[in-house]
Amino acid sequence: MTIRLGGIIFGLGLTAVLLLWSLLPGALNFAFPEKPDYYAFQEKNISPEGGFSFEGPMGNWDTQQLQRGYQVYKEVCSACHSLQYVAFRNLEDLGYSEAEVRAEAASWMVPGIDDKDGSAIERPGIPTDYFPAPYANDVEARAFNNNAIPPDLSLITKARKDGVNYVYSLMQGYNEPDPADVAKSPDFETPPGLYFNEYFYNINIAMPPQLLPDIVTYADGTEATTEQMSADVTAFLTWAGEPSLIQRKQTGFFVIAFLLFATGLGFLSYKSVWAGMKPKKK
Image 1: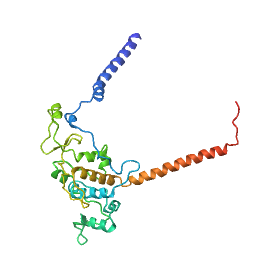
Image 2: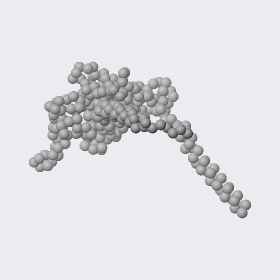
Image 3: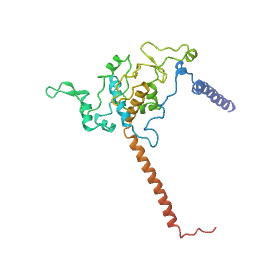
Image 4: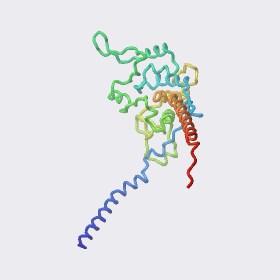
């Protein structure tokens, strides 16, 4: 009996040792992760001076900025990136009139069907159409972008961590590596066909610099600096990802006010109902 009990204890002890031995490397890697070569080059996201107009509980859309951001998307970003969840009619939220929305939609070519023979054609857009994709499929997208598929931008500010500041930072992150950081990671390199961007998650990005100064001419005369265009297109993409952002904040104020009023009313009702009742003496 004693020998059998000792064997069981020994077996359990050996199993525990082997289990701990197998888990130890993973625990150490989790507690002290090995940092990749590009870690030394990563920078924290930045934001425009003074922030964005839509931030904070009292924030609001700057319609002029949204229109400038739409212009940047149309003239620069739309060559590679889709906006599949946004329809042309939604542009009325940016301050465009119904006639302007119809004219803007007609300036885009969208897939259609020939009424005579049913063949696939391209036709001018109408307000109920959604923004067309720049490529027919992923294979074509890869072929034109160094084997990378440009992401859809409809929800990009919500799909990335700190998305608003991430997009703003990414547009301005095309710089030369800091020599001090290069000294810390001498094996790091940017392969041919990729571009160094200190705000991209692994530094090397397939998208070349896009927002070069004066690449667009703003209709309202605003100077098209890289910083200005980055802020404008970020605001536009934030609106595209959550058009009801401001309405949601405004609704929140009414809800909080109602809850405070209901709480006060309930407290007064409680005092009124129990006003004539005296507490029992112990």
